[in-house]
Length: 425
Image 1 (tube, rainbow, N blue to C red):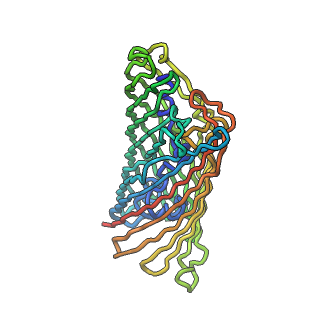
Image 2: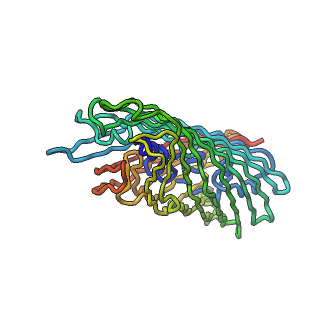
Image 3: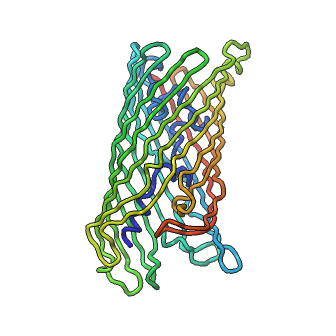
């Protein structure tokens, strides 16, 4: 039983967080306004995340980007119940997530960058009863979950020519997670378990920027697999007539791989010689982001204390599939001080049929974005953006995953608002 609880909390990862609308993929409001199509044209300090090789093309000096993102994901679960349908909505309001990036570029094309951000921040709260007052079928899987993973990333880049640059970097990750669920398998009163965990990991990245023509730029990035190790403690309220000896509090550990990813993009400025100010500054970009989620096939967990209901080692099958995101963007200057942006994205689900869970309501997604930038002065500017991502309705008729299997229909959406302050020194 404890192994099953831990599997749920440690199953969280980027692909499924995107699925639930909980991953903060919008690292900087300029990129958010372009639906994340920014790898080939990023020109602010959020390049630490989007494409560190771009730092080598910045004007010499320091660049600072401070970003705040507000997201409000909403998931709805429906399941046939008697002659009708039980509908359950997630609770909770918006969640705010900060980020900061600082870069330095020398006149010789050498550049350094550091960033601190939360790419996998999650907060989801399911009630114990549905909208019709009936007990929610998923309360034994998840009632409340919070997850924060702080990435501190450092990068170095060098511009070899006016057309080409390379970068390399390292990320240190520190994560915290907390899960609550009911224990429904042993009668009344139902029990409850709260599991707190912390984890650390290290990852690496590499990137390039290539500008074969003044009207064209190409960006490529690679982010390595990150092997997170979480350690936590579970605290139980024993269900029914069972005792503390049946559900002993104690530590556990799990090794969780976060698979590698590749991203490629091309930006094109078709009318650089136009007399029209808007057309002269028009830019298009198309990006392709590929995640190797097939590396996440199973999740082994071990515990120090065991009982009839707590296994020493338990393995949960995940069988994830590789997934991808395609995004398109357009941007131009409306005036000397104002930029306007818009974008569209398609995000392919990684969770296969039969493995969808209430805390992992994965489905193919479509998203649209708009954004604006304003220059207060030559060295100070702001960006704001709005993104709306809608997951396709997904019905699971056969639950293959145990013990978290649950049949029903999921609908998920996530509005995101982001704002950035940019300062050059």
